[in-house]
Length: 82
Image (cartoon, rainbow, N blue to C red; front, side):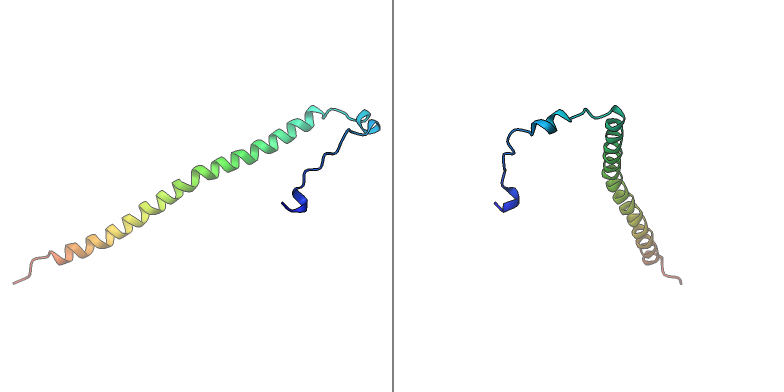
């Protein structure tokens, strides 16, 4: 454990500061929630699009390889001319 990880008990709150505590306004809570929702949405969207892009790239590459390999196979199977 390093010095930053030591758990220090702060004790009882200072009475003068405890009296100053105010609840957070609803507009602040709404803005914080909206910010969190945007980040979660972006993360989930990236999680879904990553594999789809990978599969699409693999499909395109397999089509390209198939195109070039089928051209060679057709040239090799031609009958000799007389």
